[in-house]
Image (cartoon, rainbow, N blue to C red):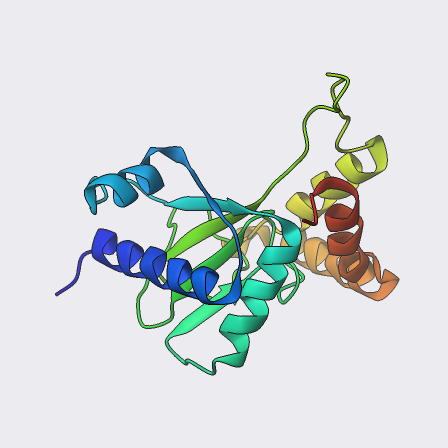
Amino acid sequence: MKSKQDIQLELLQELDEICSKNGLKYIFTGNNSFNAYINHTIKNNYDYVSVAMTLGDINRFCAIVENKNNPNRYVEGMFNNPKYLPVYVSYGNENTTNYHMISLNNNIHHGIHIRIYPIIPAYTLDDEKIEIMDSKLIKEDKLRRFLNKKVVNKKYLPIKAGFSLLDAAYDISGFRKKYPDKIFNRIFIDR
């Protein structure tokens, strides 16, 4: 039986193969990815392994994975799941399960995965800090996080109904579908 770390290593190797064949570039982020590269292992009890790419390369990577028609692999992000909250894209193994029991989420896939973060500019060439999110995007991000809360206790059924009503209004308004474009076009480096 494969461990979580074995599957994450396998996913990193596949990511490297796809990137090498298609001219995509990525960098390691965090100790786990770098350790996987140097020592071909991931330490036990680490939840995630991550890399970073430009937004254009992430989009091309996702298109390649989706077009391969491999039922064992998935990519998930705001682009294909409007209720997905993180800015990273998950590349994972569909035949595994990795639930976060404390923080329930609205992800479609719950397999063991690696994270692919888009690269965010922090400073200009003149060494000035770049303001990434304006107040409107911050408020919308807070609203999205609020609407993604799960209410499972039956005694809070009226609160759950209120969440559902607000969530439906947010869907109808069209803001949920526009949010990823606003974030991606404003924040991330395309190439």
